[in-house]
Length: 276
Image (cartoon, rainbow, N blue to C red; front, side, top):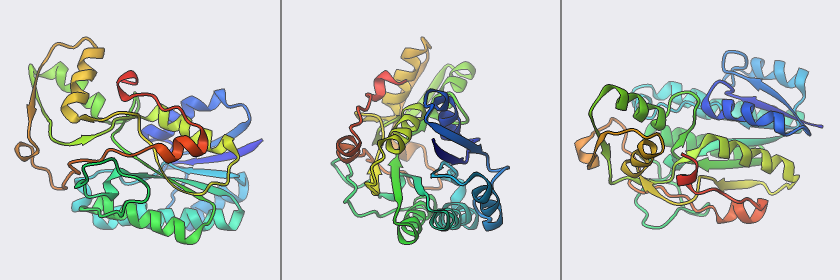
């Protein structure tokens, strides 16, 4: 039985992995929230690695407050870079593979075609820069790594765009949503199954992979589908990014090409519209 340590287990991906785990009887999971295992502390990691002795680690721990990162760069750096490096070093010491979750924010969003794993990253904000540095640390320290870049993650867990839209719809008659940023929503439950599929494949096909649901949408398209599926009647208005300024710049286009992960791990990825 393969042993899998999940860091950041209190977040939405961690909770999605916890939901998926019972169906995968060949794996033994240890779910560690940030309160239980602090990836920024070598001592904290040593304690769990020496006792549990994982074969695989899924790093779902990250500083993901995109706008707040602009004023808390040290905190973002500590979790996204130092934490990633600490995990890679612990995995190297204990001989296990690391599945490190990253983001579309490593790109500047200036492309007009879906980003592949070969495209050169160019993050524009603190969050994207620290996530890219975290990737680089993992790749430099640990040969046995899978870096999985994803985008627009949502689920029934924690805080995310879908839950925000449904909450706002209960409070307002009209909602304005940006309609000139294109990407792909990713259901955390689908992402969780993809990560488990990588482990179950037993393939040492290490490197960078993209994963999101299939298709593309604007945030307005995504919101419209959320309300349609949940039978919510609301006056939904499309607005340009310029009408909704944020401290951190968002990629105008961040669709990820999933060809590599589908071919290597034989994945069938659902369309985003079917996962809302």
